[in-house]
Length: 286
Length: 312
Image (tube, rainbow over all chains, first blue to last red; front, side, top):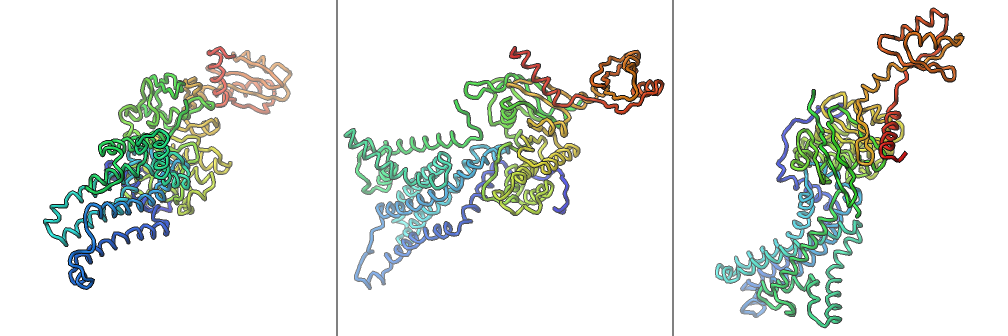
């Protein structure tokens, strides 16, 4: 029917599956995120370090190049420590990206009261959170998980099956640490944006949580004369778990690894609670 | 008799420690129903409960036969909702805004786009559909909200204060659209408003809420019809006996400020009044059917409730 005709007719066509409906929100969110050219450029630049690493891996195994510089073996060791450093650097980039992207996803909806428009449709709060959160997770995953696994695959192809089988724990650790990073970044991004509702402040708060956590941890430790402050230091907790998974030297072992896992799960639970409390259509006092 | 599209069954909702809806029982069957009440009466809470935003503390409600406690998702697929407050998705052109709504309701992307164009043309925003919502006037935003509410062809359309903040011209357009949709007969419309004129112009039935209770439920058409026999007459050349003559016909009369007010009983028609005037050579300068306006009904309902609660 011609759209210029000012009439109303009922729709009786097919409907999409409710299971994949959160992807609609994800698609619109991606479109809005990449509308900013500077953000798009910044995101593309985030892939340069993994590219450099991949080139270095190749050069590290290139016999003619090594002969040229007088080396018999590679000039760097590809082990847990190497993977942890790469993932750490990419994790910082993913964190920065979260601080820029997350507030643009949720805060405007809350400020403009758009939640009632989403949730008055056959679309649940969980799907809303999943739709918005998956944007942060996908963007972050492309910066952490993807390069990590790619590096592992390239190194395996260069070194052969034996290396791959002997170092399979590196792939497992990469997946697990990426999952932790993405869960923390996604929930932190959604929670801070929902809490503050002001894009710039929410972005600053996301970054500050890492810095403030470290500062508070140090303060608690010096006042209470304990080492328990680290439980609120997200950076430390992730590093502690990563050190164990990558079987390498992590941060000082102030707490057991199991305790670090529990603390991270508790932090994720707390962030999820904030998201659940704040992302509601109506708020009631009292 | 048509099946009710909304049924309330001892519906109670408590927010915080305050009971907002206090045992509502009702069946709505009309095409358009007006939900009236002063601020804080519970109109918005009732809508939010039907949409599943609030859980009832007791009782339940059904929309098109689906229970709000167990079938919230199915209900929301049948409802089109135009919220009261200024809500939109920032930095989005109207076309994307309406399309997104359609896609979230389950329409495939292409059909959603086509329907979004149609809906925006229908509400009169065809020329502005590529403009961002943030740059819209309040009236245009209201129309965009209406477009997103009807884009997926809901069976029940809930309009919360649809004419809020509109200038007279925009209000007339909104009322006309509601009347048009009512006459199309493809959806049931619930208009929630505190503007009695809006309800009077668009609705067949009205529910009046006060302090979380239904204080009046009326079929506006029936109310209008029952008041048709209330007649107000102004005469010229009456020597004061015309009112007595009318009473002789069996009518109850009262005369104030030169106007005769009377209620015609069964069997007496207007033509009898004309005949009586002709016999007595009296000119009828004005003869009005005076009917209770919705305002009268509303005020009566408010008074009734206050009298019952002993606050008068």
